[in-house]
Length: 249
Image 1: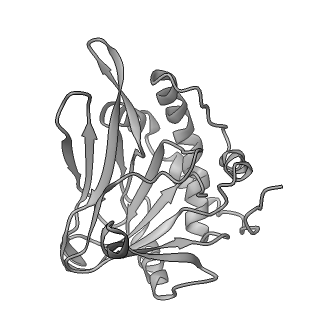
Image 2: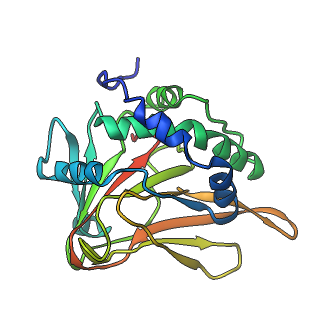
């Protein structure tokens, strides 16, 4: 029998309502064509400040582990993985966003010839992860100081990977920090990598591909390899929350 997360408080009805208000037809189109989409002002300034403030309380019971990037060659900066139960805002958004992203994930897998399909409810997908031994929660809180950066990478934590994830900027560029742009790269077959800087403001979320996404070419659909990272922070302090929908081994 697989271990289960602690019983989390019921998510506030605020999150499904806020997420449902997004123009998902437009967001879906952008994800299909660009591999990412910005969801403006998903969090209020007060929610951003409260979430960023959690970083000052390291370790259990709020966080399960802390990673100093330099020790692993990941870049400079650090982050902490939340423990179960997740903070209400993180748990609520994870559950509310997933049903809107699930059809996109299934469409992508169909287009790329991947047999895996994802259940409509996030709880059912997490149960699949846990049955495979992926028991550790993956949502995380990241902190960057001047000179810090995050190398291009992919957040793959086991066999079961949901192909979309979300990063929410908790700090305001130009006021709280400078530099620290969110960067995406894509590697198309037999082509050089293409980079894109995604402008974000405090409270904005960016949804993006974790690993691969399908692209329609002249000879059919092919897979594009995606990576993401953060450029060097030049001044101030930058906080971000990452929502990954699969759990880790």
